[in-house]
Image (cartoon, rainbow, N blue to C red; front, side, top):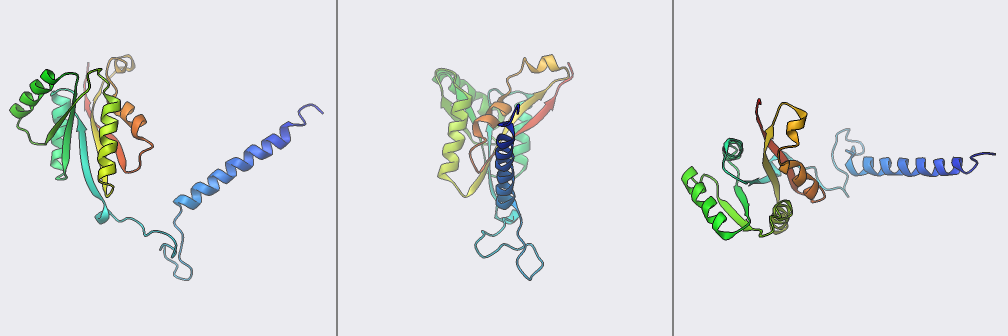
Length: 187
């Protein structure tokens, strides 16, 4: 008689798991049109997205100009899509210094600076990306963060993991992709 309550609880939990998987399959599945044998959407489904319909906008968070940042900016610029670099500054004087450095680099991609007096960076970047997405719902926004890749696991703790933190902050926002441009170091 020990554990008699366990069986109904397990049955309930397993049925909830099954219901979840059925829902995911229904939401993500490709449904064959009856009698056509192809993978065409049914009348009540939206048509599949094809590559020619996707319009991009790239956003590059830039803390400072260094090799990792320049590599990321060069990559994004080479894609030939609209792009914007975004710098978060704690004060106006630092933002002006950065704009001067940016102009010296060549201003290949437009730069936007945001003031954040309390050095709140990730929330400001995420808020900016979300606001852009809301104002342009027809675009797919890709945030490309410079990422320094080091050899040893303990060294990873010493680097600011912008891409991972942005991914967590933006994962629930549809139409925003977060990725990174790795720069490998051998230390």
